[in-house]
Image (tube, rainbow, N blue to C red):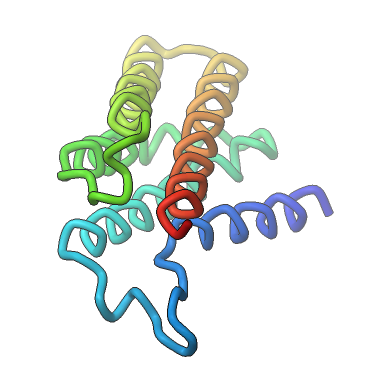
Amino acid sequence: MKQLLFLFSMTLLFAGCQSATTEEGGDDAAKASPEMAAFEAQQENFHTVMAATFHPAEEGNIDPLREKADELTAAAKTWSGLELPSEYTDTDLEARLAELVRGSERIEGLIQTEASDSTLQQAITNLHEVFHGIMGECKDAEEHHMH
């Protein structure tokens, strides 16, 4: 039940960072800038890797995190390296994305030094919270941009 509730809340947060409908029956996704399209694609890519590592860790299985830590870092770096869409220029997203990279790299370092499962579980939980912060920042920026 806890995991189902979490998945539902992540879906809602993720939807908040997707292009919103602004015209009656019109969809901004069809008119999204190349920067927004790239940003959203990398956001989804990171989310996919995060889900594959965080959810098992949440249940006590750290193996997927150990196996995919390099993918997590690569996805964070790719996402962080993109030009921010204009909708997000007045946000803290650049700093938050840099924090995502640092946290991912930290996890890789912890794995290399054979950190305990509980240490890795805390590190991925912290990184997940950073990700949630980014998702909230996207949602807030889009809501502000629409007004």
